[in-house]
Image (cartoon, rainbow, N blue to C red; front, side, top):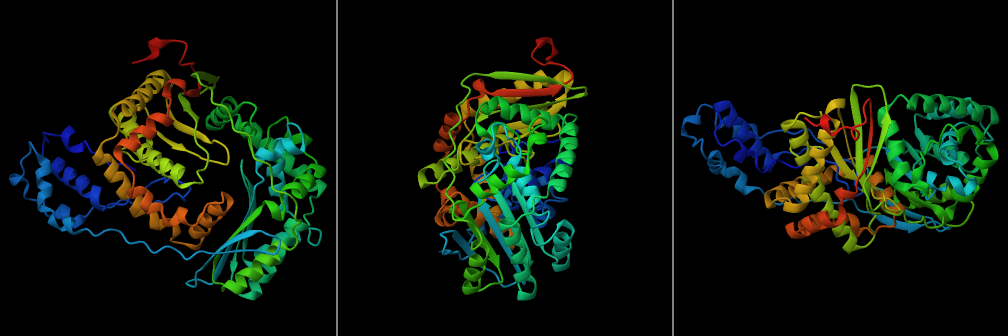
Length: 522
């Protein structure tokens, strides 16, 4: 997200008034614009189109003669209206918590603006659990999720699909590395909602897992996995995870592999469902046009058919590489795709670790945020012209997730682009970010924060995440407080403690191996 705090210093002698106006607009943006930002703290990605304060820009048109071009920042002193900016006041959704009779925790937010209900049922049951069903059974969780919406014992695939379409609901299931999610969006009146809940319970308690449909799914998936071989981004991601996690459950692709998918069978899907899609392993988030008694009744209806079961065992912690590793995958392309990074952090569940993650999020937005003024983007894209875009982010999970920086560049520039990126990272760690960069980033994060709960879906996504990771409501209510509490010294210290670029895993996919010939650096 970060604005470039050195913008003015880098342009001390603008050649014409257009450059001066650009400086004024950019400086105004530092106080008034909302930019695209990946919060990186478990909140949804919040995106708003950037816009300048046009009144402030107009004030300087035709009056550039009075601007001291040797110190253009002085022009900002006349923008006195910005001095009256008032602190952001945020009204958070009222979260109500309860448990079902089977012990499933529920978080509920009542919203009455639209006649809609969103339900998010999450299980600690992602693809990291595949091998507990069968050794090297990669893809079992994903196939289970695919087939839940392909018919039940009462309705075949066509009947199930037709009922979903007739009701006009969104009903889906997905498996990720950590979690298994069943989502429902329906109109809130009984005519639509009650049949929708019935479908949801059918798919959870009585899925058909039809053999013919399973065979069709595997055939389609195998075609997709073959096509993946022609996608350098997929190749890089798979190789990165395998090298970073090795024998850890996060190492394998959630969708499975060409070797594992053919051996997935119906009994494995049933075993996965019976072991992991259980009440002891579940949590519910609910947002919409319901009263609290209605929400409680709905939660009971959803969970009554779930077996009690047992909570999933804790995942092991992956071990860091502790040394640099370079992997090159030959690929016929004029571009080289690059992924670099290391083990990151796990989801913080206590205030101290949450503050540390906030510190890192602020520093990383300055270093590797998706904004054009992030340091990596400024140097590697704008100054050196090596790539159209470069960014990096932390992905905390139940166990330590990855920290990744990704971009692509011309084959003959790959080594130079990698080394330039590492130099920016090392310089940032050595010298730290600046106070102005910190202020601009924290302002942006706070101003973007309300957009995370500007819709039912946004609210429910936050509730689902908090429920899954067993975070207290204070995680949300203290978000702005955590941002206000960041200190420049602590941000820079956290960045130094977290990032170890000398030990980065670097994966390249392209025509030439950038590690074979240093003469490719130009």
